[in-house]
Length: 272
Image 1 (cartoon, rainbow, N blue to C red):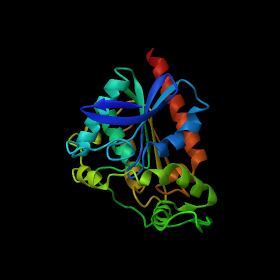
Image 2: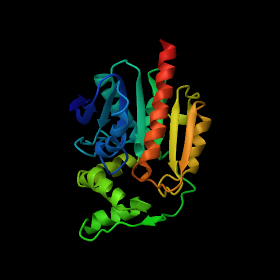
Image 3: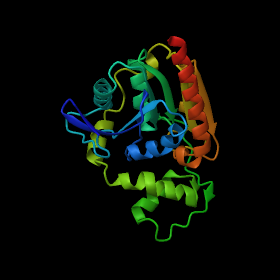
Image 4: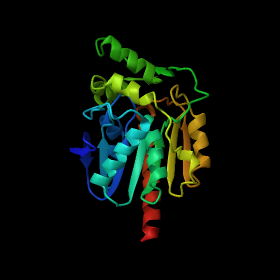
């Protein structure tokens, strides 16, 4: 599907009906990665309308020159919310870069964004990041990937098995050729948001923060410290998981996200 926001055609996938859930993917991929992780959860939890946009410069959403910062991306997403969700309460989920954007949306729309889930979120700055360490190396890549994709797989995954290789081939590899690298460089050169998510008052709704113990991109120190701003947060730092946590620990991700959805539903029921 497509919605034009400030002249930009924003492509998104939509599934189901009910309470809207806006799910934002990370950098260098498109909506298929986070959708692939979340859709098995929603298959068993009806009553949610899932919106998976391609972020600017990735997938099928372009990034014209007017989008020159992360503030511009947030503004575009707020416009998408206005055009597709309106003033309904909604949930927001963000993975990696999408987590940075999701935190901004929750801060700017605290009365409407009634639940926030962050998976390996990056922030304004990153520190205490471990070296990339492969914990499991059991994938036979012979003839499976070209050299660039093999390098991406090996640097992304700390658990390299036939299962994670299949997930990479299905949900990550197809999106890599759709990335507008020059546009992302322009946007990321103005990385810090004008309204720092944690500068606002504490966010009152149910939150989930998932971090990988071996995450060599976001680390786990920064994500762990976020819970000071989220008094209703569950924090889980998962061993045997790097930045590809959604692929390396899918069972735990599904259990924890489902529990968060239950907490959000209870809070919504209390409001009515």
